[in-house]
Each structure stands twice: as structure tokens, then as C-alpha cells.
Image (cartoon, rainbow, N blue to C red; front, side, top):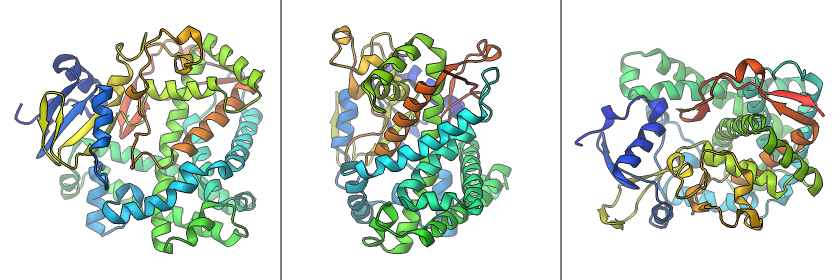
Length: 440
């Protein structure tokens, strides 16, 4: 096919179209999308090979609306948008506190999760689904990241009405940024700009507002810092202030959206599978831990079925051989995580929500087909997700706390509706998810 951009269908259903292409053409196929040679891979071996070929300065595809905005306004962004030596130097500084010696974060994240669960308990009604759960989880995710940044001074900041209002405004604006970004998937941003498309006009307004609010929040926290208990204190000794601010702003923008929706999916799956929910609850209670094997399995299984990024991409650094094919340097290789995560060759009964498939110590699962490398939601290699440990900890903690206090269920009026994943920059439900929290 000379150019497949018109054959990819609706952007919201791209993951489904690519899955059909894999079923037709196999584990590796090429599309010409605009001027870009793009290769999609579904095989775990080829996916791992992609990261081996990413080179010393891995490059990944970026949302076109964001890169166009950055060029138009000459705006400098954080780690996600960096490349080359600048990216490597900043990344190496963050690796140790965020991915290696991360135990310092645990009490900070736990405290935020405890507060949010108490909020649920004070507002939930067993007869009514939780109202605006997505918005609630957005704010929770932003607060977790800020607690990691500000350390113990975060609690002092939270005592301020002004600070709490800033966080609430920020969470709302971040949601808008991703909503408008997804709308711009249908049209090149340069054309949308020239034609004064409303989605682009709104995008141009909301991005500066996000940056303004994030800057205010961080500056507010800096006023209260009094001990080396947060990431801001650690990084202030190693990074120039403007660079540090750029990195942190992008960090809280990305983390709020991705972790919030991953948790929405996890709650939906638990509420929709009552037998599994009861078993996981027993395991959490018996383990007397917020990070037992079962709860880790819930998160891994959620991200297998609903990877927040259904495609992870790398531009390969040199000419390479993929299977039977020669792939030239600078080709964009996209890992089809949604497709590989639901492939029966890699996962037994792949449509079933089974957190215990990840427990290799359980003899019951010894014969099950579970190919861990077919599900790589955080990627691997030098440019793997820098916030993965924060995301895992906060999801493990919050889900464990919720399961010990609430029984989750789907309200009767939504049981007749099938929730489906659609792509709006990330994988989100096609309708608002309703979950009822019944106190145990």
C-alpha cells in the first residue's frame, strides 16, 4: 500500500484496525503513514529486539499537536520531549531516586492514598455509583506526584485552601489538554491552526494555562520546603531551576492522566468480576500488605487488557533485520501492545481477567501460557517510563486499601452496557465508568 493513512479508520479505533492487520498480515507488517515508514510488531521477541536497537539516545514518536505547539511558540518541554545528550544527562539524574532507591517515596504515597480512601468513605452511597470517579482519580494522581516532589511539606501545603484550589483547577485543565489533543488526531495541527479549527484554538489556550497552574503549584510548594524529603530538594542541587521546572511540569501533566485511567480500568474489572474481587480481597487481607502478589497481578492484568499506551514506539538507530525483513535506519517501529496482550498464543484465555496468571509460584498457573514480554506497558530499556514505580506503588496502595474497606459493584443500569476501550491519545473507556463502593 503506497500510503495507508486513509485506511487506518477512526483514530479512536486505531488499536482495533491494527489488530485486524496483524490477523491478516502476521506479527510484522509495514505501513506508509505520510512520509514515515512505520513497522508494527506483535511478536514478543521482535518487541524486545526493538529496544535493543534503540541506540544510546532512544527516540520515540511524539504527539504532533504538542510538537507543533512547541515549535510555534518556541516552548521548551521536559524529559518526554528531550533527545540526545540533554535527555541522557537529565534521565541519569532521575533514575536513582525514581527507579532504584525509591523506598523514600513509599510513606508519602501511602499517606495520600489513605486520605483519598477516607474521602471515598465519607461520600459513598451503597445505592449510588461514585460520582465523577475519573475526576476524583485525576486529582489523586496529581496529589501523589506532588507529594513525591514536595515531600513532607506537601501536607503543610494541603492545609492551604489556595493550594487545594490550584490542584483542583490543574486536574480539570489537564483533562482538557488530553481531550483536545485527541480531537486533533483527526487533522494535522498546522492545518487545524490555519483553518482556525476550534479544537486547536482551545488547545492553544489550555496548554499555557496548564503550565501556569503547574508552575504556581510548584512555586507554592517551594515556599514550604524545609527538609530534604522530596524530589524538588534532591534535584535542586543537580539541575538548573528552569530545566527542573520544565521536567516536573511535564511529569505531573502526564502522570495525572495515565495513572488515573489505568486505575479506572482496574476498578471496573474488579467490580465486573466479583469472584476474582473476593479472592484478591482475601489475599490482601491475609498478606497484611499493600503490595501482595495478587494486587500486583491486578495491575499487570489491567495493563495487559487495557494498556494505557496501546502502541509504544522507537526509531531504530541502525539498519537491522527483523524476522525475514531488512528494516532501514530511522524506521519507526511500533509495538502493538493491545494486540499482543490479547493474543491466545501468549496468554491462555486472553479475554479473561485473571490476576493470578502472573503468579509463577502457583502450581495452578504452571501450565498456563503467560508470556510476560508480550505485555510491556512501561516499555523496557534506557527510555522506559521514568514514573513507572510511582504509578505501580500508588495503584497497589489505593486498590489494596479500597478492597479492604469496600465491595465494588457495577450499578444495575450500567450492567447492560458494554464498556469498550477507545483511543484518545491514551486508552480510555467509551463511556463514563460507574462503580458503586459498598462499605464492608
